[in-house]
Image (cartoon, rainbow, N blue to C red; front, side, top):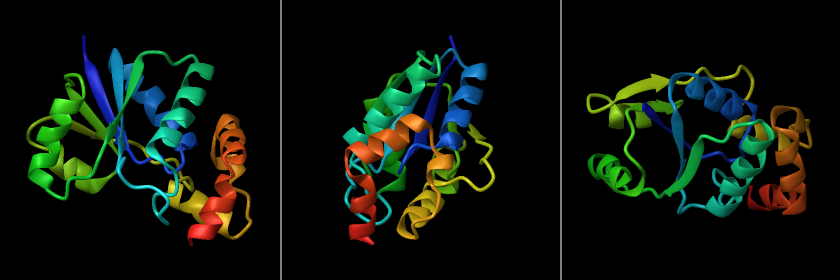
Length: 163
C-alpha cells in the first residue's frame, strides 16, 4: 500500500487543494493531510485555527466522495532539520510527499520522493484572503462548503479585522 503526505496551511481550503488531493489519491492508496503552521492562528497569513482548517477539510472531502485520508496538525518548530523528524513522529508512515511549497520540498528532498502539486492558476489562499479584504469575489475559488463554513464562523470579519 502506497501512502502519501500532503502538507499545506489551508488558509482557507480552496479548489486548488481539492484538485491536488484528488490527483494525489490517483497515485496513492491513502493520504495523510498535514495542516502546517497549526500553532499559528488569528494572524494575517494564518487567520483560521487548526481546528477550523480541519473542519473545512472534513466537510469538503466526504462531499466529494473522498474517504481515504486522515488529517493531522503539524506545528512549526523553527528548525528545518528537526521538523521532518517531528512530522515522522506525528503521522503514519508515508512514501511520498506532496507540496506546493518550495521550503517544504527542500526539507523532505533526499529522504522522500517529493512531488510538487500543480497550482491551479489564479487560486491561492493569499489571493483569497486579499480578495476578502478588498470585498472582491473569493467565493468562486473555494468549495461551497468552505463559503458556508467561513460565513458560519464570521471568517470574513476576522480576516478584515486582522489586516
